[in-house]
Length: 346
Ligand code: 5GP
Image (tube, rainbow, N blue to C red; front, side, top):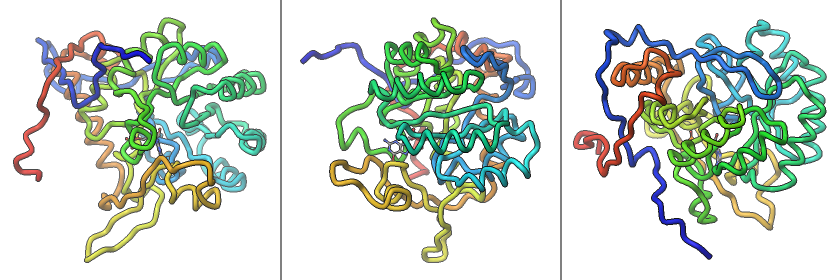
């Protein structure tokens, strides 16, 4: 056993220090970024914010709205092949720059992935997602998918440490999903004691990925727009959101009325609710590592998107970053023991 003594930080432990700036207005800030991915060599341009591949967030409906803003949706893996075909037949070609098909690493997952890609060859992105990206089996799966689909852009995770980011990039992934335990409906830290504070995970993983020419996606833990700014400031190339995009018209999940208030269902993909729905229950040998909650219904996602993008633009003006790309370079974090004043929120 050993203990690492240096303190690892989460979003709640820091703020971004303001800096002298020549920017006059938020409207001068561009959030669009351009990347050429390591293996696929695909040149992508857009606002690097992603909806998570959860069936209550990463829906076709969500992708139609987000893609209008050049934002990305990792479509959840539970759509049927016919539903994918219908989506492809009823969308314009450009949407495929902003959606991925998702897969787990089981035999049936691979088979379904192959079928979807055969039926919808326009798909450019594949998201290979497991709760624990540290297994050799996962790395082998990434290698296999890379061999089968050399021109697709592969997102893979989740991991939280530099050596595993490097291993996955070398195995053929282009983008590495970073985050174990920070998610709003995740109970991994409670059930297993395993995790890594997200800000430190980003800083360390971004360094490893950029050294090899890859990119990272900070996945989980953002509760307010300022958290996305902190993630980008720490070096995240993309930020993935679950809870912040839940509860909208475009989110999946049942709508529920309780005492005259409207809520929408939101649950972790490893929750009992999700496993009952998609896998016929929680297998005997495992514990669920996610929870199910009701979130207040929030209407169209468009307003939330404006709020998020406005917040990040404003961060950029506080530190003098004319483009999102410059935010990391212009970020100095201060370690703090307070965040917002909550006198009127509790
Ligand atoms: P959020 O933005 O809601 O904080 O986090 C979203 C992320 O939480 C997802 O992209 C995914 O990585 C993670 N997640 C989703 N469902 C579960 C779950 O059931 N258990 C765990 N451990 N993580 C989950």
